[in-house]
Length: 305
Image (cartoon, rainbow, N blue to C red):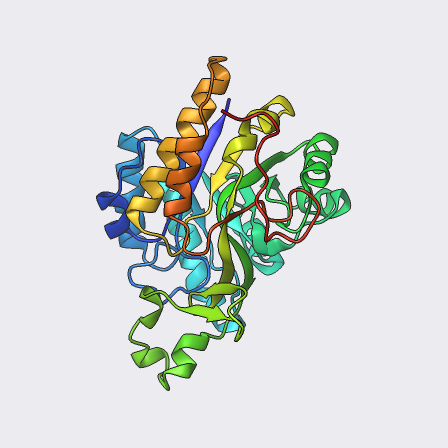
């Protein structure tokens, strides 16, 4: 069964966004538990979100804080306990310590190991499998061939990110807050506005969301979904960290349509879709590292409409 998923950070964004195109939602901003009403630190909103998604027959995966310190483990434990009680469909973790915490709590809910787990080899996945991991997201620095090799050579599920800005780094330090001279008691949530790191010559930019830095260009594999499906890829993810409801809705609709047309063996006209996706991309589109080179360029299908 094909699954299309994306990310929603808080309940306010969830209820104002049309998520009908998606089969599953990853809940929370993994980079900052202070983000307003973040699911990974707000169990009241988490409960409302899970109930809401279950009514819509959507799967809900809780993304746990990616870069915890020792002082964070107690409150994270309480969040995990509540999520287990609420029967979330899976946890997404990025940290071995959190993985051990789930084991210590006798968790039986599926575990996904996320992008900041830096998965490059099948040997790493074999270790993670021993700790209950059921799905992995390979490093975005791997090529399609390397990620397909991981999918084919390991018994657990693999998620492929097919659209959105590529997460480059997550940090415990919020650089926007430090730049503004604030602290955690009065950060002002300046991260809710767009911040860009631009090379002086203006050749490229990266998006800064405070504790996470992302690529400037949007990864776009819309024209290659059919090839991925032929290679047995079943889990597709749209990376929407820091994006608007319009971005989530529009990209979801486009990728859902492409997937359905591939399944129904219908012709797909890509040019209009790529034009729409380009209009949503601040710095343009790219293919990331999927074709084995540094991801500034965008490659179309050899046969196009």
